[in-house]
Amino acid sequence: MTLHRRFIIRALLILMAVALVLPLAAKRKKAAVRPAVVLSAEDSRRYDYFFLEAQRQNLKGNYAEAYDLLTHCLEINPQAAETYYQLALYHSAMDKDSLSMANLQTAVALRPDNKTYLEALANNYYKQKNYAKAAAVYEQLARNSRDRSDLQRTLLSIYERQKDYGKMISCLNRLEQMEGSGEDITLSKVHVYELLNDRKSALKTLRQLVDEHPFDLNYQVMMGNWLMQNGSKAEALRLFADALKKEPTNTNVLGSLYDYYKDAGQDTVAYSFLRRILTSPKTEAESRMLMMKRFIKSNEKEGGDSVRVLALFDQIAKTVSLDASMAELRLAYMKLKHMPDSVVQQSRNQLLRVAPDNAPARFETIQQLWTKQKWDEVARLSKEGTEYNPDEMGFYYFLGLSYYQKEQNDSALNAFRKGVDVVNDDSNPAIVSDFYSLMGTILQDKGQYAQAYDAFDKSLKWKSDNTECLNNYAYFLSVRDTALTKAAQMSYKTIQAEPKNSTFLDTYAWILFRQSRYAEAKIYIDQAMANDTDSVQSAVILEHAGDIYMMNKQTDKAIDYWQRAVKAGSDSPLLPKKIQLKKYIEDEKKTK
Image (tube, rainbow, N blue to C red):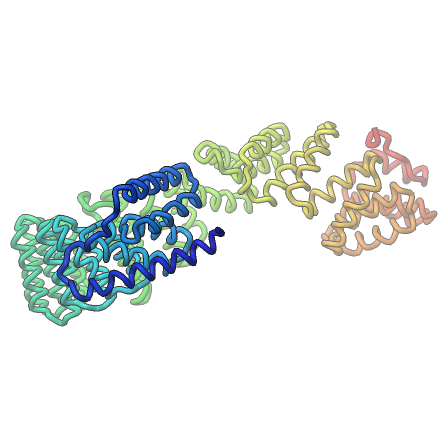
């Protein structure tokens, strides 16, 4: 028999069983348990055997076999509630919700006293958003399980969805009997009373909470806040003033008084309470941060007086010192107000003193110094960054670049190598590619060509369109007069990406020259010179132009370009010889 056919037979059995038991339910509503089918001793043994075997197969993971055995159990005893319950679990796992529900309903009809079946049925109703039926079953469960507060909370959630506020109050009262009065239950009751527009009951509930906790001023403040929001400001102020006498440094009291006077338009008085909160050593850091953010937001709405805000930051720094969060907030505020870079940088420095592991602030500082070419400072900050954030490869990047700018190539190479050691699958491919590209350039300068080309290959593996790497790799290959076809292919990609880049055009022209494609080389070197818009043209490009023009038998122009290269500051030892002999001379050192 196929599983699909078994499902059909199974559904028919359920319907038959429900049809059999429903009339009994209608006639005998008060019956606690339905009479079971009387089985013979032999059938009882058979049923027990197959039911236990089903459990065994289920534990072994043989779910199809277990399902078949349970179906067979129903053939022996069509009123076995436990079997209907087990089949309901199977149907639920197979997302056959209607069959699962039918099974659970049958199980409950057969055993209405079984709490497990009832709870499963109630959960199913809840999942299907049939809140009325779910509530009825949960209420039945709650009557038989008076110590289970979780059932009351579930009922509370259902009645909230149904907006049945009266029943919500009943649930909260029962919860209060089980767990005792507490802030969460009391505030929930207050909220429901407000939804019922019963402010008298809401206030009575709050007063009860205050009376039950006479030494906890927070409840008194809570009631004061409620009174203020509901128009009883005089009584609210009386409560706040009384609480302040008892605990002059209580943050909740001070905060409520700040709100009170702010609402009353007495900004000077409100500000005095705010200052007391922010500068009190007894104020928790989280509360201090919250109040400062509130003040900044309010200040911005009223015109954004940065002088008052910064004055508060300064007072905090003098009395309790700025912690990392407050220093970060101060920096964010200064950037929000577009303050001068020098002032903002002072705030960054202050943040780094209290939180040296703050990577964003350190990176911003490094970038500021980079634009000013302060390589020593960049190196110092980057090195510290690698110590406080050893997994942040950006610091190794700037450290290596600063050493490279200082012509400390060994130190730069060491920094880059440490940087690639922390590379992972989430690393920025462009930055990793630059790491390897710079390593390749340094290794090339050191004459370690095999290692250099390996680094270039790795760079392009991370980012195949890294034009700087493609250009440098291609040029170094051409200088050594090796792999010129590969060099030409890489170089051509760069001028496709940036057709007016004079450096890239020069590289491609030089590779064509090395391939003895002189006429083509002349086309691209002319473009390189046309796009070299610096006030002083590149001596390298001019020398290459002379070499290319000479091989195109345009001697006068070649000599002119060589002479211009000398004036541009070329340090090529061959240039004077080229000009004197009026011919191109190969640099043998570069091709070794």
